[in-house]
Length: 230
Image 1 (cartoon, one colour):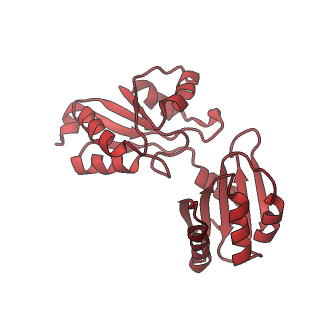
Image 2: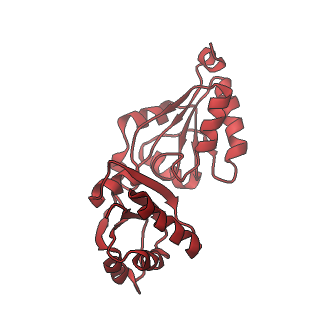
């Protein structure tokens, strides 16, 4: 029997809405309400959500710069019998967000770990794009360096799969330019502000979307999808 089985402590990863607060699940609310403490990527960002849910719990800051250290501390809390819920600013912890190091620490130390299903910008954008979804690759955030961005986009066509990336609104035009240079007729989708009031899906060829976004100031959170099969 593991130490955590005796104490009852555990870590629970809880996905949170990527935009629309109505997407929080009943199970997520229940876990957050019953947890001893909540680890947040940014406590200032998470407080409005928790306030909306009328949940008041001690908050722990756990972000990319302190996750390695914080993971050990959270494991010790769990061994002492506490249940720690983990949330990030939006979506599933661990997907281009803190969470991976904590999961590894839990597995190494044999503490109980649970992952709740929930909102994901990756899956939402993939289905909404209309691109092949039986096989795809998620590349996380594209590099700020144009050469690395080009390499990541070229890999999509080499794989023949649907490629999914997070991209900054400040770089989307330049990224679409690179994509249009590689394969101007590539089926492309720019998904903006998913689940929010001004959600938009821009679909077309790489050349068409480059023309649409060039010279414009894009806003909001963006998911870029490329059909690598065509």
